[in-house]
Amino acid sequence: MDLKHATRRIVALSAAFGAALVTAPSAAADDQVVTVVSEADRAAALAHWTPERMRQWVGDEDLPPAEKIGRVWEGPVPPGVGRLFFTAEPGVDGSCTATVVPSASKDVAFTAGHCVNGGLDRFDRPIKIVNVVFVPGYDHGAAPHGVFPARSFAWSSTYAGPMSGSDDDAVIALDPVGGHHVADVAGTQDLSFGELPSTVDSTILGYPVSRAAGGEALFSCVRPATRESNSVTTTWNTDCDLAGGSSGGPWLRNFDPATGKGTLFSVTSRGTMTEDGVTTDLSGAAFTEPVRKLYERAGEL
Image (cartoon, rainbow, N blue to C red; front, side, top):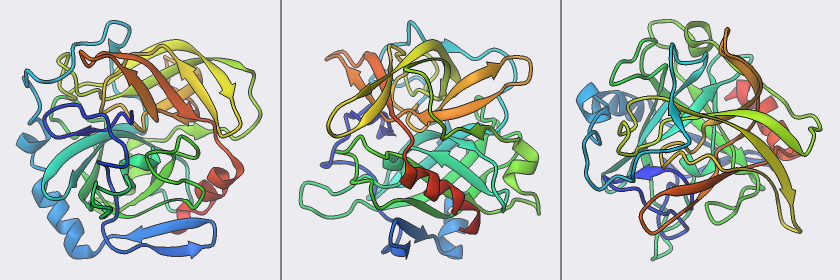
């Protein structure tokens, strides 16, 4: 399943339910797809996501059980990490996790592809995603750095949608707020596209929408991530149990608790759930050359 929270329950997302496009996408290059959000839609997104609406899942009895491995993050939210909110038409609110990364524009956040491109419904119609905003440092309804509307987002053309685990990555360009770029006020996490060992000590972060906090607090797992490859894809895997809403959350290596900084080498893409809604493992796509190119061009969005 894709670990994106949609509706008041955690839903196992597939091509039958997911996120698609705000408007018809136009390819900025042969190897990436870009969607531009109008100024009117950006204003509507800010109006939609009131503090009360952001907290709408708190106390929902239908949420998955609390995490046992994942723990509430103690202290300030690490630089660049925050909660990504959206609405999947016709009116289903949801959330993911995203991370600000270095860029020429200072406006770029990195997340999972399925958080902005979820494919088609059961009638083969795109499910539109609207009201996309990012809240760095989100904590129990507080937006310490502001609420940043998305002006555009992009994924690699090699990403085939939520049924695919390959290249499940996306970049989001955010409007400045009060004249300030998100990277300047919230900080960033570095990215790594180099070769890594088959096992990496990792700190995995996300905003799981479970009974533990209803997405209101950042959670973490400090676990080894192992690389697995088959004929189709290469993924990083761990027994971290963060629930839906953690999609797009950073997998960081060489993490320094004192500074809250590390190097992002994957993001949460998929998870396995029991019938009771308990997550038993997570996986994230290994970064590829198309994803590197996607990131390198993100500052132009």
